[in-house]
Length: 140
Image 1 (cartoon, helix red, strand yellow):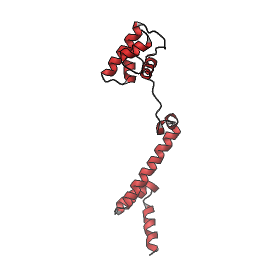
Image 2 (tube, rainbow, N blue to C red):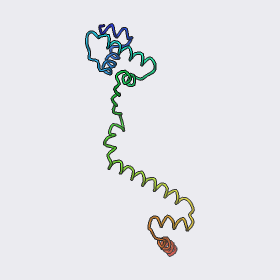
Image 3 (cartoon, rainbow, N blue to C red):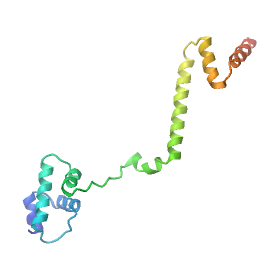
């Protein structure tokens, strides 16, 4: 069957026919054999049943669709997934979360035991809080 007849039979435009043909891996030619016409008809049926073009082509050909590179912030995704970049982003987010929690806790009244607990984590010593209290008291 000639290309123009096939396009008319499928009820699609030339540009859609080119997309379908490329997706199915069929070379452009003047006449298409019955086997390739059957592939086009199967693709049309898949699309009419609600499948998207990449999934329909994958169903017919058995090949997974080629992943497209996402525009915008994901276009540099492989570089962003390097171990050093990921580690840096995790440390930065952790630091930000720690500081957020730190300032949230500063806004609340703390008992001496809670203050000692937080200072102990930071300094590893119980004596540091006593030094801070003594120093704060001497300024008054």
